[in-house]
Length: 179
Figure (cartoon, rainbow, N blue to C red):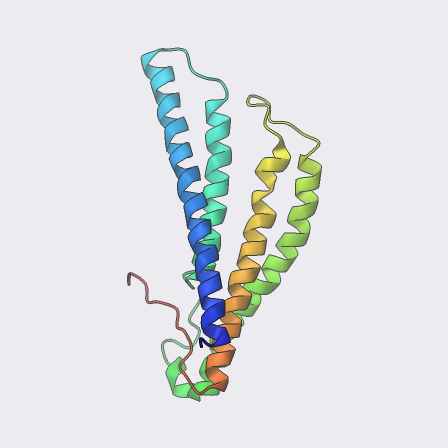
């Protein structure tokens, strides 16, 4: 029987896989739209007026979905204020220093979720100039990013706390450049 931390990790992993798949599909769409834009503008000399706008919207979604994935994999922006000496603080001190960035991300994401829902509601009343897409669809990337970040950050914090209580090593943020 798997532990609840392992099940949570598996659930978050499945969500991250879906997140990555959607981001990859949107990135492929972005690449296709940009290629089409270049072809129609420079080869046919009859550009599609909507292509730049749609490319911008796809890019916005891809960036926010990728940012959520960085929260899951703990590759978000973090300042090391301990100058590499965090391991000398003991397990409790290390846990505290590990959860502070997660708590900051969690707080920011909750704020962004609330504000993003409001922004998306306003966007439902607007359409994009050239593509006639609902701006609510575009702005929905904000609360989706925030919700994913909340789930990933809370899951990471819970996994770390469970590991601490069990006396295990917490999942660490991978070093820069490590794959």
